Length: 309
Ligand SMILES: [Zn+2]
Ligand SMILES: [Zn+2]
Image 1 (tube, rainbow, N blue to C red):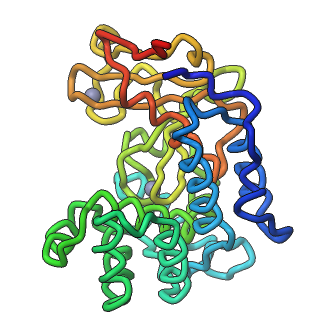
Image 2: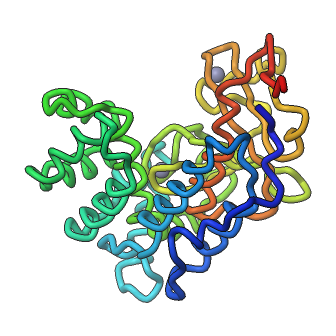
């Protein structure tokens, strides 16, 4: 396996998935970035095309949660103040002001993402079955997962014989498409000291990755359920608070170390992927970053896999 992700790809994703002029700029930029990545080998090429389809399914249209938290909305100043008070007490924003999601819109997004799945995949088949027969169940799961976390819907997923990884990642991506802008508005006034926790200040999820942002390489954690970003201490594990530098180890592939790395915590076994970025990653950019760092799951202390041929 080679880690030279940056390069010239042989085929533009847009040739296969089609371009639409009305797509959001952040999505167009992410699709262009996807084009620039070279995959480890030709077998991975279908994955690139699928990723392009997934990005479009999730982010082609914006969300419309209520209350909107738009500056023009009369209630917004009051609600943002309540959210800030919640942060002072360690409570994530969605448990103070719970956004109502448009069920039809959410469902359309879930269906679009589910349509990108390989229909021969048993996990996709089982989720699809529930999506067709009980669509309201799917939107219930998304709503409960947003406020109470992923653990809270596991028994119900099991009851419906739905494979958790597939369902949770589809729901997470759907919520990110619905809530990303709302989350940005909620965190616009987040101060450095307002939220000293590792979990997301908007929805309470564990961070999906970290950015090492700008020339100063300041650490920001990012949530892949709502898209929030919040400042963090780079010498502290966001999962358990460990700050002994001996307990935090960094792994990377030599060819790609300037772009991304994996921090392992001996205290809790937590794994945090860190990506270098000049500016905050957009929501499609966040999903793309996860995709291009997947290989970090396969490196460990003892051996970094390399291409043998
Ligand atoms: Zn979140
Ligand atoms: Zn830890």
